[in-house]
Image 1 (cartoon, helix red, strand yellow):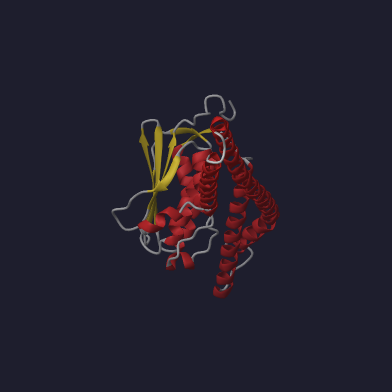
Image 2 (cartoon, rainbow, N blue to C red; image 1 turned 45 degrees about the vertical axis):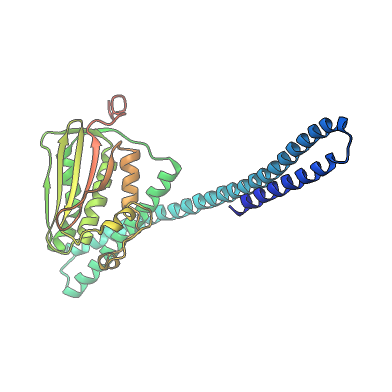
Length: 315
């Protein structure tokens, strides 16, 4: 803004100075030269104005180009960093899977009985491995989304089976906290959608609900509305303040509450969920305005994916 003020003042000063000097000069010349002087006066003023504006615009253009070059370099560096972290995360998957498998095997006491202390330590080991597995999965998904390497794979599948699978993945965690977990589907409904990505989105919402709910229940609900399907994840947790809702779907954002401080996470789950729902499933995700304790997150998607007519797997 300051540069525009300087340009305006310079332009005004040059114009006033030229008018004063040119009018003074006209008093000193003969009458037959006045018309020519008026013409020269106008041309000189136009030329000066053009040069001033060109110089100002050229300086702005150069500054803008430097800014764009710096932004492009920062984006390239960011992509390289994300790719490096994603590659590292991918390499961690195999040992993490082994840790999870063996810890679960030992907790089932198949090799032999465990005492209470051993069970507790193995439980901590399993929970930490699960957390790290979630972090690596989020980072890998984010890198693929940023690179545009993720495209929908359309399947035809029954909705109720998908809902039961999603609930089964968090049932043990819910039971460990004493939470009731219920599922209400749409019997007989068959979707043509990206099954894997829809399951991933539901797991993100269900995991958050279980993580931040200390007492009560978590419910997964489905309802058909014309050509669309609405999926809701309800919980009886502490709820979310209205002023904090706009931060929910931003990357790396975590609400500053006692519940979030106790729970671990990257702050990427809801951000990735929105990217998947809007970019791959052709729908929308959001937080319903609650008139009750807790939170209600919803996903609305078409029952038949826009690209399903010629992209159903196995057809």
